[in-house]
Amino acid sequence: MARPKKPRIDNGVVLSDNLYSTNRPNYYRYKRPDNTWKYFSATALEANKLADIANADRANYVPSVKKNATPARNLLSFWIEQFIEHRENTTPKLLLKNSWRNRCYHLQALGKSFSTVTVGQITRGMLEKWWLDLTHHQQQARHAEFRKLFNWLMGSGICAQLEYNPLTT
Image (cartoon, one colour):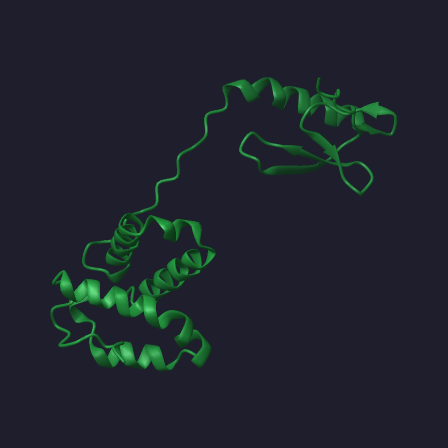
């Protein structure tokens, strides 16, 4: 049998569900259905009334689905997202690794760096200039995944203008 929930009390007033007091006097926070917090200033009774109203509307809550805008097909960031999906489908164990999230972040940062250039306009010189701006440790952390990315891009015929992988050792 589960232990009953301990009531939250602030200044002698039992707080409503999803309402919490803060360390500051007369400041409260309400936990929204999407797990974000709303901070506000009120007395304990006013805060309870506001929380009761919000809790009544909680049953009607419909989570909003955020759709990420898909970049244009001629941008590197579009093909980076395709590459990430390809890697996750071919190697499902990647999803369990924390380093995969870091590598995805680095790949997406590469796409942002070349956001003004189409895939067909990327040259070895542009990549080399960008690569040399990174520190040794940044290069070491990104090198293997970027090499796989460009092997995939060139193998798919997306970066046909490159004669060879610019990150090949």
